[in-house]
Image (tube, rainbow, N blue to C red):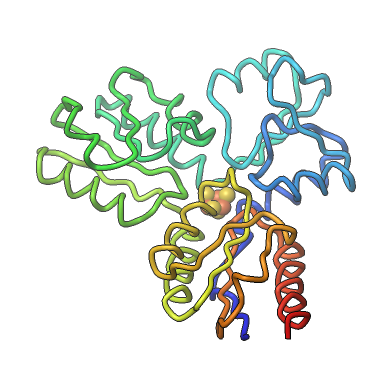
Length: 280
Ligand code: F3S
């Protein structure tokens, strides 16, 4: 069986940058997980003493790293008022939608934010709106039918959402409203990884997608793989691999989310080869 990696996969610019910042931080803590990958979080703790806390109240170190997904405006203010040193690892592609939401809401536009309302990035971006009552988070175009919108609308997306669904939302808004300002805030890494997984899944007999099960972009990759290759699996580590997935298969495609480290991907590829060799 041949194993082929997607043309574009794994660590993106924002995650690489955040990890470098964390490694240099010398024992700071992050508020929330720095990135959505439990094994990498563990490595940062063991090798660089970078921990994380879930609640602001638990922070007892003077230095705080702000995670790639960013935090809400209120949380930032609270930390600043406590005199904490903030080390900002927010991905610049996340800072951008925060600025857009602030500016367009100030200008009186209704805001449509395409994303998951429970995701930290979306909570952070939404918090920058100057008019919370006119800022709507939606997961798909059909949710828009229940919202009475004004004529001036700005639409933006969570950085890791599926491009095809964003286009449906934009189409619906343009068809039904006079002035729609579209901000494509889906980041390039997401575009490239999604495109590459689609191409590979079409030719592969089995697809392995590696990443944190709490990672939004990994889940999107898995869904695209599954649409194009029925035998697609999402795993976090090599212990989850099963021999039967690879029986009678000629080509195994591999991709990984933007917060999946290269060392983990290589370990998993090695394990897939070993499983196959042991079976033959
Ligand atoms: Fe940033 Fe895009 Fe990565 S938003 S954290 S470069 S997936």
